[in-house]
Figure 1 (tube, protein in one colour):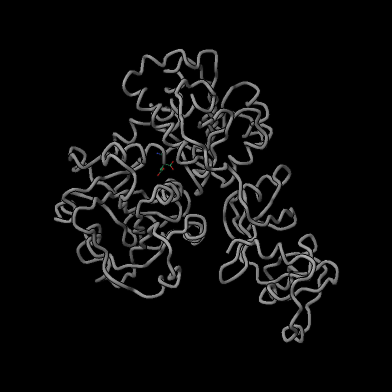
Figure 2 (tube, protein in one colour):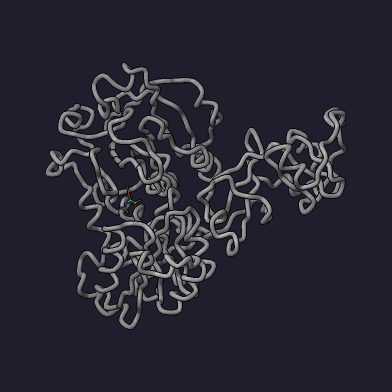
Length: 485
Ligand code: NCD
């Protein structure tokens, strides 16, 4: 039985497939008879702490709690809260969580809501942390897609626009991969999907990733662009099929043009430029958008059009009345979805779910590198902002290079150098596989430059080590073998 009671929802990964289906089941019941649920959260209070603007997310959470018969306290204007006096997020959360039974937080820094959960006494929901994740928007997206297509399996969803900074994009990609849908990334100029997202799709979801020509998706761009202006926008096609051999290498060559096989559906998930996070300005560079003309393409006859909203200029109002447009429905389902989610987290749903919970929330099986002296390379990661309150920790991951994945913001920092605190020597990570099996994990230090290693008191090992073949099978062979590749 799914039991979400008391859980934090920071990433979409905090929900198993069964959890999602169980939330949808409750949302279906709410949809059928919303009034039946009034009073299910009576005496409970939700606090909404919004350090960034919001319309849909905050108001739908607040409306949902009130429809459940609970109360709401809200700090949505940071200038009117103690944050403007320099109060840390950690302190604010400690206080506000003692005033409420559930907290909903939006914050401009990646990992902020995870840090908040470390200090909260009550369940915390991520309503968007910087450019990282927005899991409850994804629940609305999936619910809308399921409503339209009957299932989430085997869908083709083209996620278009600002893929680098759009947090809804990242959560949605992980969710679609989990449900076995195909994802097609169609970025605006310079707004590519971050590498760490692609790698996670490969590593954790065993997805197959392939670069394709835009094909039928060219209709999303102005007629003379992007190909005629020399822009190099391509589609990245992610399919959950395994086994596969090509992996990232298939990103290197341009292969076939994207097309949808006869009888399969296509959904277009369009997003705005996140200019507040440094995205290129409107009217600069190629950017996918939808208007009547684009939609008149015969390939788009049966598409579904989604958008997390707000829109700026990427979906023309002329398509609002088009039956293919689902974005206002997507916003409206925010009520049953958020009512259902809060009921589950507060532990007050009567819905029985017979299925086994298979996903272990917030866990990873890799190798942890918990060192507060290693600084996450993402400047807007909460660990670089609230240094007194965060506890930086990383997962050691490896593909072509060794990387440390920040457990707050998921960004990966490439580490080309590694040191041994016993010898105080540092050397290239190319030696890692040969050398480190002889070194205990607690004696290992990662560095990204010579300067950083020297500042930490390490000396560069001589080149002759490169030729040395170490015996394997000593001390700690086991830890290096468990690194996620
Ligand atoms: C999104 C967000 O805040 O990330 N809005 C929302 O919650 N529906 C999308 C956006 O701001 O572009």
